[in-house]
Amino acid sequence: MQAVILAAGKGTRFEPLSLARPKPLFSVMGESILEHNLKEMKGLVDEAIIVFGYKGGMIKEKLKEEFEGIRIRYVLQEEISGTGSGVKLAHPFLKDKFLILNSDDFYFKEDIKKALEKFPCLLAKEHENPSSFGVVLEKDGLVKELVEKPINPASNLVNTGLYFLPKSILEIETEKSERGEYEFTDFIKNFIKQNNLYVVKAKAWFPASYPWDVFEALEHLFNVRKAKNKGKKEKNVVIKGKVVVGSGTLIKSGSYIEGPVYIGENCVIGPNCFLRQMAVIGDNCKIGQAVEVKNSIIGENTSISHLSYVGDSIIGSNCNLGAGTITSNLRHDDDTIKTMVRGQIIDTKRKKFGTIMGDEVKTGIGTFIYPGRKIWPNKTTLPGEKVDKDIM
Image 1 (cartoon, rainbow, N blue to C red):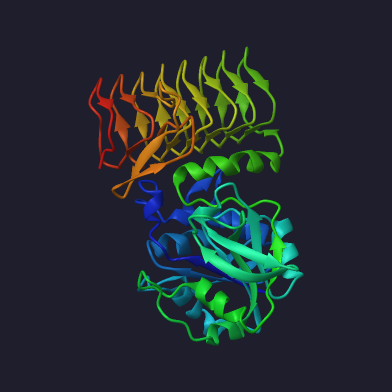
Image 2 (image 1 turned 90 degrees about the horizontal axis):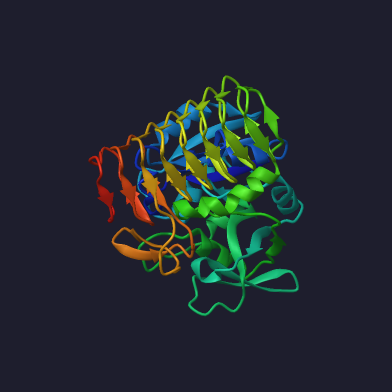
């Protein structure tokens, strides 16, 4: 079985985390989203055709020619002219049937397996915010219509971007969309005019359009992980709940860890720090004295100095947070947090949301970061500076 994985886009809505690396290589719990999806396809797929573009060399360097027993073939999409164009580039290498999926959404083996048992099909999932996706209208288990991002959706069943299809679908003639791109969903819309397309409903699927979307996947990712401790701990360390600790990691005296928590390899934690539920610490991190981290993802090789607080945030790789850095994650009016994305104010729909910090960022001592702010790479905040707007 072959799978076409779309990984060519720039991931602009994921900035600043997508500036230093392609979005599919964003890492959670020691593996990138792309690696996660490949692992979920292990035993189901023999070959993955990765359509790459933006910073694609990093993807090739990461995966090489084989991953988890799956052969990897790379196809370069030089001009980003839509998902339809991307899939068509794989046409010369495809056999009769193939799987197609996005590289930057979280899929899971149980659902992939169900999709491969129903040909041809589209994988769909109920979502609380269907107007942000393509809405699937079904009848008797078949796709009757796809409606892209409707203002008043007739259903909460949305398209996950995973399909099991015949190669012949790529021979259907389509026109460019209003935004000047060839959309793969237009191939689907034309296909269902003459053919049946089954709806398979996913048990778990987590899109990652914006950085804060990853928080929605964390609980499920923790649920499928087993607790393990390969590190070392000093006296007077308290560990409760499901906690994963990588090899070479040292947890110093007085630290309190309340799972679920993930700590990577070769980290130094504490002394006297507090890691709360849904904290994810990457490899080679230093979490200093009296630091508190909750519901946050900390990238590899990052140091958080003493007396700092990181809550409901994503901190990139190779960052250095000065002592007393505080990420504020709650507004005084108890409203949801808004943030700026490409010049537009976007509602995260989250009551608690701290900061998104790109790679290589350094903060000075006593830095205070307001809710919903993003900090770009190569920007150092001054000691005592209050970050109250996006730093570009």
